[in-house]
Image (tube, rainbow, N blue to C red):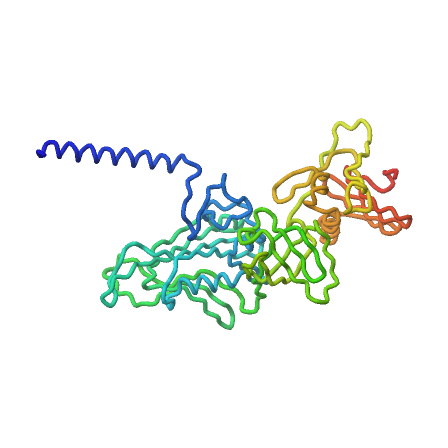
Length: 423
């Protein structure tokens, strides 16, 4: 083969590679279903991912409203004024990436510190193993690095809201360290070597403070999930975790022991919140060490009342008749409007939510009592046996509890009272 033909073949090959690169690059930009690797796990872009799991989302793409409950579920290490959460996850990160570890592993931890005003400041620390190598004791060793990202954009009182990234923290001369003192416990990335600087323009390496907390704070190492009781016996219950719960990736049925002398009864179909130690025994059904069981359907919900405008006449409709379900021995009424409920970001009619057991009327009343106690709303208790009125901004809830045995509930326009309703 002469040199001219060989040159033409090589040129065609180079051009073909260039075209393939351009096509592949465009696909990466335009294809919404590309899966990226992050945190040592697979990250599926927002239109395909589990909406209740934000563990794998990049720091910059976290939702603006990143709640404490979500952060606990995402296994972040969390510091509040009175508690720290998921310290076991921090200890795991130190074990995986610390300088004294024989085989350091790639890992990432998200750390959240809450200000006095309750605003989260988020720091993400990653430990990465590079493809580059250096020689140590005559053997090639991979270079490593810590990467620290800080995000204070949710801190309302920060002098400057921004996200900063420090990627130049060589793992060969740094290690993660948790130091407990009399006044505070401090997490930092400590410099472990003496540096000889060539000139005054060289970067100065120094220890990096990550976070700190008081030594006497309460440690909360628990996890929790929501689910439904699908089998109930005297000494155990079987719970099916809700779709989207992290534990469901391990098992779709969780067996929970109640003890030999248990006297608590959990009806099949009851919604529960199960708080456990964080360890899951991978039997089938899986088992957990339970801290507490609560009759609870969701961490956050909100009544959405829509007033009828213009009002021509006052109308009372029945939301739910007690004959339609075994859950209630009273009726639930709607007074002059319509009512929905927002549960974990999903809005639906209150009727459907009650029938599908996604929320219970008891939970709504318990929340109303707490709102009244916390002075978020106003209310009144009547001397007819204990009926109560809960006045929200644009609607009112009335829960009857009369000496004659009336236990009905009314949800209606702002300002209605027991005297307004004929029952």
